[in-house]
Length: 114
Length: 114
Image 1: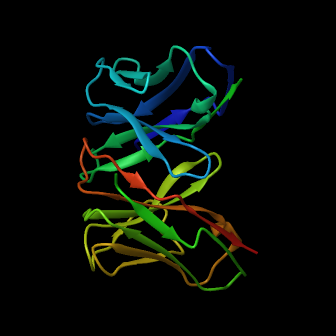
Image 2: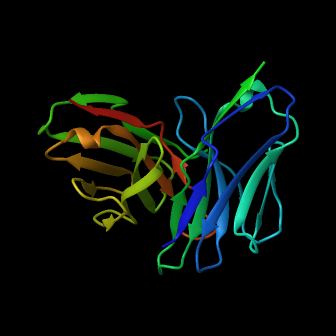
């Protein structure tokens, strides 16, 4: 079945460090890949989406692309700030079952130290 | 900004108890969803609805009922609560259900079954 694997459960960085989070996906369809971010005490919210392989999604200093050949997609930011501390979910948008669905990865807790 | 409001924010109940979680969205969205969030699993879809009186089964429906009474209101019912249903529950809404759709989440209800 369709799935998303998010291997990095926790990432700890210092301010101004480079962020890179990677996920892999499995689907027989043409996916849209999303990144949702969840701040403490809040629900997840859309950070950005990528609808076409090798295209780039950009939002709030974050960039994401996905690679159809390696079935991977990643999120990066050149210089993280303490305010970026949150849980980041990679999400597969998939219609292969005949009904559109979102499949969430297990999340990456990002902690940015001042 | 889409608004999804959940109540209560916290709930403790006993095993075998009856619990109703409430959700209201004020953006005239067609679709509403109930998810549960557990460590190591990300978010998993319990039930969803595309309008008043409609109910669709999600990926983890066992032990849950749901009812959409109006365009705005969606309820999740646990009629015989069990400790395995201790979780953080999110309600969400969207206007459509396709590859470009953004889903808007509430702040969550933390349910503890003792």
